[in-house]
Amino acid sequence: MAKTKKERRLEEENEARVSEIMARVRRMDIRTSRLVDDHLSGSYASVFKGRGMDFDRVRNYVPGDDVRVIDWNVTARTGDPFVKMFTEERELTILLMIDVSASSDFGSGEASKRELQTEIAGVLAASAIRNRDKVGLVLFSDEVELYIPPVKGRSNILRVIREALFFQPAGRGTNLNGALDFVNQVLRRKAIVFLISDFRLTGNHTPQELRGKLAVTGRHHDVIAMSVSDPREEELPDVGVLRIEDAETGEVVELDTSKAKVREAYRERSVKRRQEMKSAIRGSGVDHLEVAAGGEWLPQLMNFFRQRRSRA
Image (cartoon, rainbow, N blue to C red; front, side, top):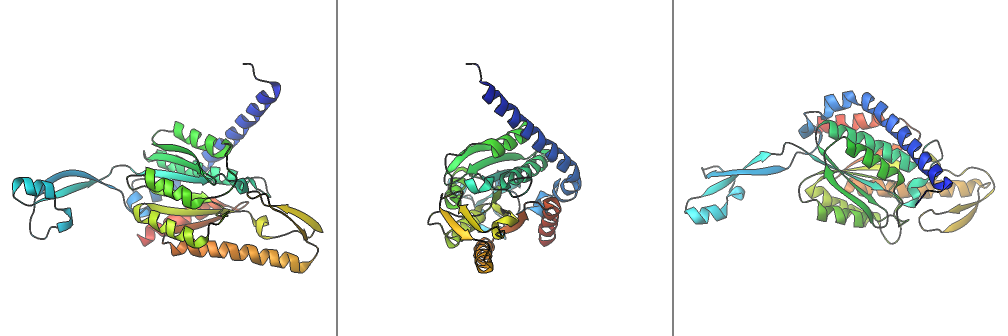
């Protein structure tokens, strides 16, 4: 069936946005050459919390061996104690978990939070592919919307960017707990999980529950939580009576922003929510990086990796 003029125009606009994002990612890929060469390439073990281990072979037990690696099946069959030998995996698995709930579409500047998340994901994917590692993608709202199993190849970068930017989610809310449960089920081997979200929970989900879920996932994988925010979300402009709609719940409230007390109460509530979430993430034991729209986030990312490497 032939496409309408409107459909063709939307398609052209989408292609233009993809080209723009890709151009920014390519420029960042050049700027991240030092990040990749000095902090990622050939030294993932020092930046991330170790690789997974592949079974290699068995050998006879010798005094001093860890009893936890005894192969009891072979030991029972032969009558002599044997231990399992492992080799470090040659590649890593990177999983990008991206929040595509309705609040991610907000942006007070040139780019929305979703576009910022896409740029971050694009750079991470480019760095991983450059190191011949596998990259997978999970898009979630109040449900898991899309899952792309980890694969290799540069063509995967473009797919990650397209889906992260243009996928139309069925849900509007945010269920981080459900997304983490899904990841725990589908990832059988150790992976590096980047959880990229504004961490604005909806429904009955609490920061304390999220803390527990993150802790569980962090025991099996190297989880890095990346909070994406917009400065305007914590400050109200002085413009008189303002109708504000919650993008995820649809709740609408009217606030008289000409009153300083109203603006201050709004700011305090927003800051409190952010601090509670920050405390929950850090309390879970996973690493946390905060990124604000409109700022230079790439130097933050580079410094973040340097700190991880120095700690290791």
